[in-house]
Length: 316
Image (tube, rainbow, N blue to C red; front, side):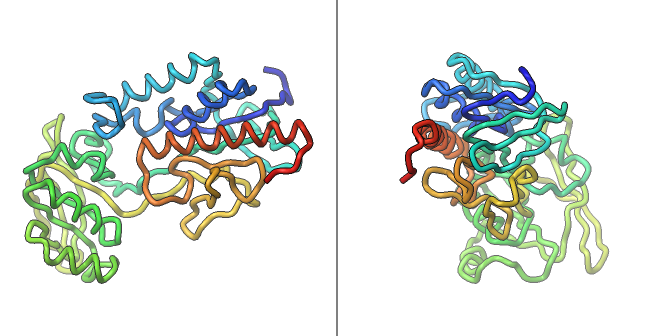
């Protein structure tokens, strides 16, 4: 790869959205490349099991990620494990600087850097991710059918996810550090009328304990009284916020108050030729199948954008 090399499409991020975008770009015969600084496959690569991706039953997140990578590479997509340090919006070409100092230029840029659930940062949390600790009830709730779980959080998402879990599990303890929830009144009313859910007020989780392979209990503390204790549980669902990985998003690109990138139906941002897909983009839900769909849409739109740029035509 030479310095100042030009591409038709550069994709930043190697999760389902980025890999799908790469696959469709190569199918459109575009000169495209994908950069990922971390684990190829994104967050799904560390998921224990995936049961809601259409057509694939009984597959682990790692296996699904491997399949996506192989599929994209089979069309000739270069998947390069290299960090992107800067992205700049241009008039005709957008620029991408790699951590090694190399500067690349592209007509279309697809940002697929994803996002991440906010963590509690307590002992045992990282150790039991995928083995009892989860940040997605839709993804993992099925595995806790007829079991007892703890849900952490007090906003709309925490309450919505607790209500979803109440259809599956035996008992839910909603742990919140405050004395009144931040969720909407409608959601709170639904929560309080659900007999399987018990709210534990003014309480934080200070540790998640297990047997080495699965979660067994949480250690808690009442922030008002200082009382501490331990309670058995089969799982811990954490919903204290979600943050987009938007550090590379150029300042010219519009974002909402939470930092998610605002796009149109083509996944194109406020800057022509720059697209945002997956968990980085403002949308209703974050699921693997939706991320993959975003990648497809953005790649098709990018192909049209590149063609229009070559022809000097006007974009509709």
